[in-house]
Length: 214
Image (tube, rainbow, N blue to C red; front, side, top):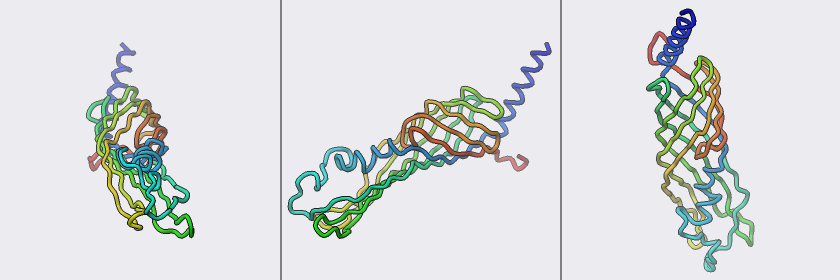
């Protein structure tokens, strides 16, 4: 009887915890590998946009200006997420993420800078998160996000000899195999998965309720 009373009391406490802190806002940073597949490093310049047009400097664009790209820089995958806990084991919400690549374009003969090649990948995705361990200070979970991504930015056209802005549209996704959160209201997290937010990602978040007395 004492054991049953203890377990019931613990369950009520944990239930009260998640019901009092249903809102969840977090900021994360992750590896940009998958995001890079959408933009400059793979999809965009290995076959412009959705893999069907070879860019001029790779296809023998003989009448155009002879140019080359300088050193490319790529940002980490940055994300902001909001979730609402609809049940003890489930949260739903939305995620906004960003990753980019940046490079200057130079004339091959004069080494003069003539333009830029920048790619900005922005994704907005509905998110579902499944909690398979929920304690007062620790959560273990998995999750999936799928939504809309677009890549936009200037690229240098050798024939027109000027920058032109392009936009390509994709299906964005993120699958979290395992994630861990540690903390109560303020918490840190780390995730292992695959998608536009990174294969490895980490950050911090804040749980709250819309009650004024919380």
